[in-house]
Length: 334
Image (tube, rainbow, N blue to C red):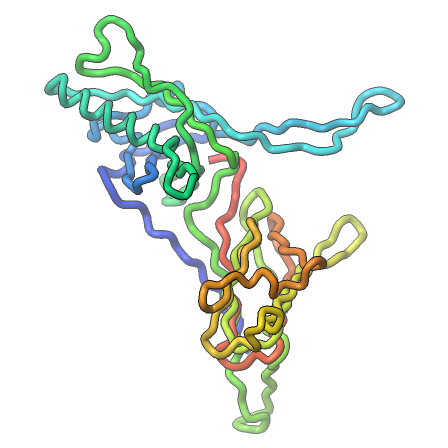
């Protein structure tokens, strides 16, 4: 049966001038930076031609994640680490805004940037706030992102001579998820092979039960929670990961049974989407299919850093049956 693996590349954002020439940034080296506000507008942060640019000396918060420890005192002294909890990240980003022509041009740029960052604090119709996205791009074209909210800093220096044709905002951004995310999605595709006559043109076998026992590599630093898309035909779907912990081997599994929501087997071309974090299952018509999972024993497992041994089992599969696994690797640093 054919085994196909294909990456999906997220297109670069569009908007105002690009990030500019790579500049040295503390903790991460040469890079360019952009900020995408909740409206989708992309603002270059390291391009002097834009009318503002980053003062790289004051940038901080791009390195490894901070942790809070839970420890247990030991009877013979010292402590034992029981749990390490990643903490939200604060990023300091000094931005120099200027005009080489008029005061009002400077003011307009200042106002636009202030709005772009503070817009993250507006509550939308759904009662939620939409974060902005800070993106760091390397000279090799790789890009990592983090979702941020504005906290403070767009006040300017307030010293004599500032605020006429130029000023500096020392912006503090807050990230509820402290990990950086690869801008490129990894897409793993597994598809049922086309059945053949056993003797024509030569002996061959095609399985209608097991779509694939394979490996999936997570190139990041942290566990990721993928999204699954299952395409029929299939009557029962089971996803299993096998893990080695020390000398022990154990498995985690979840099963999706369309009969549990009164649908019956997936037909050719019908698709179910399973999101592992937060848990969500959508049927072919977009309806809620959480009840199709084998609760309470279902484990919507994530992918550990490195190689993961996984098995996709689709009972009743045929030509066209497929599984697509999509995730964005997560990293400690930009």
